[in-house]
Length: 418
Image: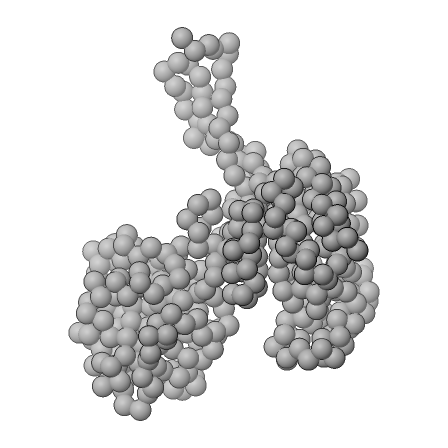
């Protein structure tokens, strides 16, 4: 296959399709989503057979159990895909919304209209259910999309693509509105991220290596985050019970997510009282603690933290702990080591909470809440395409609104500029 020619063809088709999707009615896009849900339900056997091939190939190629688990399409996961499509169909459509309308002294009215981004390229690994999640969000927000899943899920993704094509056809939308790349050649990724004439934005979903490569090489804007080095700071004015509950949840609710706490900061005024309580809770859950010098002096027998630990996204039952000199010390540490994902303060002091919110430069900043809430569903977005730690366009969990932009609209009645 001539990969460059193939990807250019997908890009051209997506650009044409994007215009048709953008002008389609909300009801038409919802119809496509619901018809895709029905197609998935009817294709359970075909999906299972395609997934079986991927799992067999994965085992033969030495994929570990964690990767195989992410790859597997169980009946429950198919149910979840179907339910996800139906839920997205019920979400409010941001496209066409006009806001901030004002009359200018000249007599014209000026406002902003929300519009689709155009063509969104999404690059992801292993989990075939992402194919449905990504396609549904892009379609609902009036965009066309080109999906490039991992080679290990090629059969599953192509089976899902057939269901998506069925859903689009049922609604009278072009099949090219959602295209799943058919080649496993890695050159396809290089082509996709360097086609600004066809692709308006890239969303990578995968490991740090994948995202670093795409961020480095892309000639198309990228919505992404690299690390989730999230912090919880227990202030000297914290309620001990709240602090204990939030810190334990932020670390142990799930270990392998980007919004899991990786570093715990404790004010030196309460460290002697709080750290033994926290250590007991974490020990009961099998969490290894790595502490600064002052932490190790309070908690005997734990490992000493190195400089690398303050930068580390463990995605495992390991936690870095540092005793800091008050709020200033906490903010200084976070702004130095944070990946600008999610950081939280536990305090009953309103003034300190406001300072933390103002001075911590992250995409989500919280007061008396677990970092695990940094999620599109929990924020009321319905679903998310990913989380962005960038500062331009979209920041934090990216839902339907994050897949749109705004343009100015002007209303006049024969007005001319004097």
